Length: 237
Image 1 (cartoon, rainbow, N blue to C red):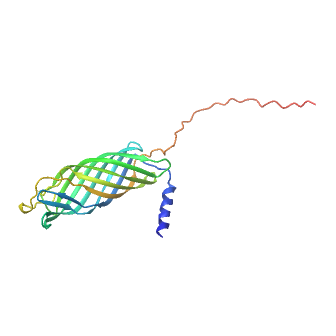
Image 2 (cartoon, rainbow, N blue to C red):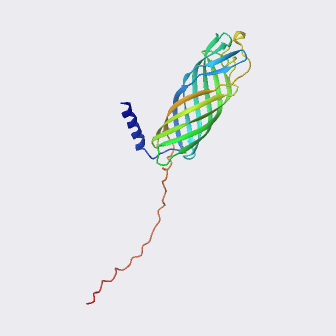
Image 3 (cartoon, rainbow, N blue to C red):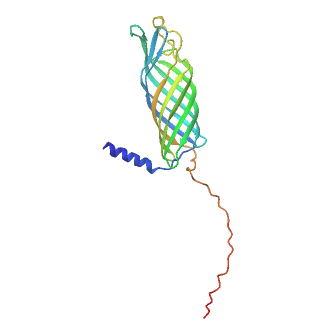
């Protein structure tokens, strides 16, 4: 049964062997973010795994290059633990909102619906400890992503990607894990690296690019001069 389903999906993708793309794409996404541990002087913090959701607006200058504007939200549980006893000092939920933008480079293949891509992102990460905390903070953030697009029509496709998002000097006990007071004080800053796997639906809204290998032929007028019919054949006896 599984082999039949995979074969059907492969056949369906192969039908649309000529890739299409538009100049403007809307891509709602969702996925899974893996846990990450951050180390302090006298304790360590941990952001648990969580689902993430968001979306991108992609402005394509050509089939090979575009600019992406991305929003991604991660709602996760976090805590600070003692190094020696491994005991939990404090636990709290945190929401991390990434607002970022950057270039996207596409790699296309002739007569294929598949397109590889990779890109870089710069922007901001907004930390909001939950349920109520007055220690919201915004930090500069960077990220990278890569994956593949599968187009099934000029205006519809599927995006599969892996992404790594990281706030610069993003973690400290004062705002990232909530306001814990002196009992759970931490010292210094450390980096957060949030790796995730996402999938999205590509919705093409702009003008369509011409298909790969297609040439635009400009019409021109040709004038043909008429000639009289050839003379009849003569036979000599």
